[in-house]
Figure 1 (cartoon, helix red, strand yellow):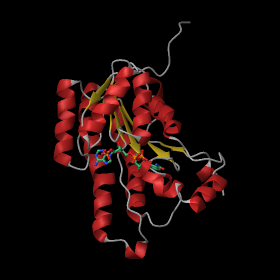
Figure 2: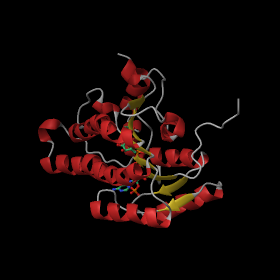
Figure 3: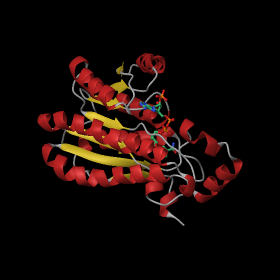
Length: 256
Ligand code: NDP
């Protein structure tokens, strides 16, 4: 019996979209700690560069690639550039997402279409692009960030729920086509995580109290709570896990 270190990602290139803060940043750090070269992304070049420098100071192999994931042409060019300058993407954590909260009966159609275009179509496009080279090379890991609002209903998030629910369905459909090529695809559904995206909620004492009481873990999730799940699903040891939704929510959706 030989000893083998588990979950190592040495020699792999990982692209984490939306990784200058929040869930993406914590996941990028976890992937980097496991040995991957991690491409940091966000729309603001200065912030991307700052995260890269902070990561490198910790000994992580972070690289910068600022682009807007919602700009499909820019996104396609960026993935091509990563392949040329760093290496083909082995691991994609398609994590960047946007939100628009408004009551269903007043929800503007333009906002619905904007959220669907970003949270669904743009994620589909970037994932399909990396899937092509992953399939050619016979190895790949694709992860989407889903949401528990697509597992249990919640008011004021109709477009977001539609897009994230579609991502949950896509991982099952894509797994039927990609898994035979050595590419796994899964989604992670965070519960309520304390980030800039949810700032209005955790600063609202009423919501904050409700959430702590409603969640068996008794607290908000932190970005680090997702990071280990991402690193695990990206690892060679997770090769037999595909087409799945992993809910990371402190027990919220398991209980009434
Ligand atoms: P944050 O707001 O903390 O971080 C968002 C990140 O995405 C930043 O790095 C931001 O950088 C980047 N980003 C935003 N828009 C774009 C874009 N158009 N192109 C590239 N990068 C972009 O968000 P979270 O970490 O909370 O959310 C990450 C994901 O998790 C999202 O998909 C979200 O829907 C999902 N999620 C979050 C939950 C939560 O409770 N927080 C719950 C369920 C799901 P910059 O603005 O500089 O571009």
